Image (cartoon, rainbow, N blue to C red; front, side):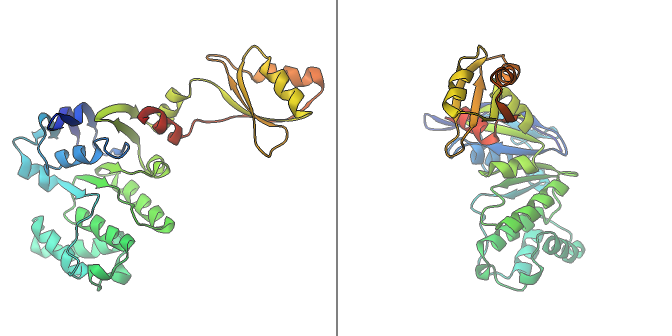
Amino acid sequence: MSIIVENLTKKYGEQKAVNDISFEIKTGEVVGFLGPNGAGKSTTMKIITCFMAPSSGDVKLDGHSIHTDQELIKKKIGYLPENNPLYQDMPIVDYLRFSAEVQGVEKNLIPGRIGEMIEKCGLDQEKHKNINELSKGYRQRVGLAQAMIHDPEVLILDEPTTGLDPNQIVEIRKLIKELGKEKTVILSSHILSEVEATCDRILIINRGRIVADGTSDTLRSQAQGQELLKINIEAEAAKVEKAILELSSVEKVTSLNGKEGWFNVQSKPDMSSRKEIFDLCVKNKWYLMEMSGLETRLEDVFQKLTK
């Protein structure tokens, strides 16, 4: 199920939490939705799920508008909000049965759906416990199970791996990637490596506006701009640093703390320093032990776009 967001705005008084944003998510895409706290992520998600009305603009799921087809849209969406509200005094199985009934799952299908969700979300050993007896990680799994109990076409997950240990995160990541083969998924997270490993595409929002849209590789290449090299030369460090800085293609040289002979070299815009560094080593009979390109990290891209 495709999602089209058109000129979406949400105001609180004079403040715009979401400021005229537009984007499209195609059926079967897993999209990471990133942004600092207060950027507008959760507000956008709440509007898409019909939990909150926008000040202006529209959201359409397969052509159905949030203004006219809310009941239909709600049936098509599974939503895990950031605070994961659960009925703490209910046993897991009873809560999932209640969630299935609320979502209109046919009675004869409910036992099978409960069993499937317990297996998929790794709740088998805990299924007879009350929710208030669970760790935060297992409560998060229950939240995921309730979001998927009615087999929705769209999943909107706000910080789904909060409270999970590294092994659980890997399991949930695998589950989300599997779900993405047949469902449209919007995933919000502050763990950038998690988004990069799970999502086909990344949207970054800052101060209510979309500031980036693309794959992680695309965003990194757009932000990189200047060549950055890591080199190791066996020679007197001070001489090496001075000589490299004098090369016509080099803008900046930084020695690595505690690593004798190791440097980061930043080339000038639209230039490469590789050949000049190699020729310099040949000329001075220095041993060039390593020269490799440094890739821009997604964390660097995020910081650059949201500062």
